Length: 344
Image 1 (cartoon, rainbow, N blue to C red):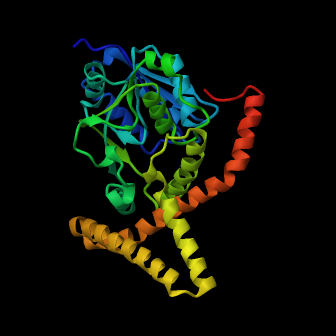
Image 2: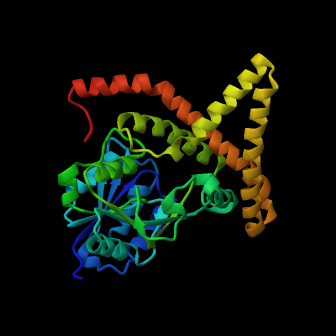
């Protein structure tokens, strides 16, 4: 198979902690260097990200650095795609490292399988003790639900993959990234692929090492924002999010409702249902926490026991915040459309 010229596009913002390892992994690929350009689209970084990229450009002239005044990922991707020259677009993330065969396998899968987006499995890693504990949580079914690209070792057609590899003409066919999506832009884009009759293929041999948040505050903030944007995304683009994205919301709502009903009615029925729900949850929490601790060390046990409910409640309350924010968000979107300022 003759390999095409490709454009690798990475949205970046304040990535000085990860950018060197990311760039090194990109230029350690077994894909011919003369057949690729690597476009970093910076969202107004306040650290040394851009300075470091420009310094690395002396050794790797394939690096292109562009500005993204709007800061968010969909704007960055659209800026990068429009400025790119490749026949194939490979969307990467700076918070990750890539095995040497990642790009080649992605491109070969895209060109040899009947699909419009090719991707692989995200292997979650963390830095430091807390980062590792968070990564372990996010690598279990209780942490991520039935997220296929985190848990599978099977090839096949799926709803979504991390990042992705696309033919250039796909964007002419179905449009660019939806610039309304501060988060979930990949879910929305993959939903649009499927809606237009396209296919998304996961090759389990394609592996990316993704670095998760490494502090309790960081993972709770991420969970809250993800929960909020799941509601917004589902409202703007019905069908783009799966049931698993709203399980934490159901858990939080049922807990609040059962507590209130128990206090108001003083009924053993509602108190029993609450005890049953939380008893089942705490058993799952203990099981997965112990499973991690058994492999990694018992010092992980108390941290994991706290991480699961903290993350799930942050996620669920984020979805509640999303519901409360919907009227304002919808009103602002209508005003943007009226002014001709809607996204892609």
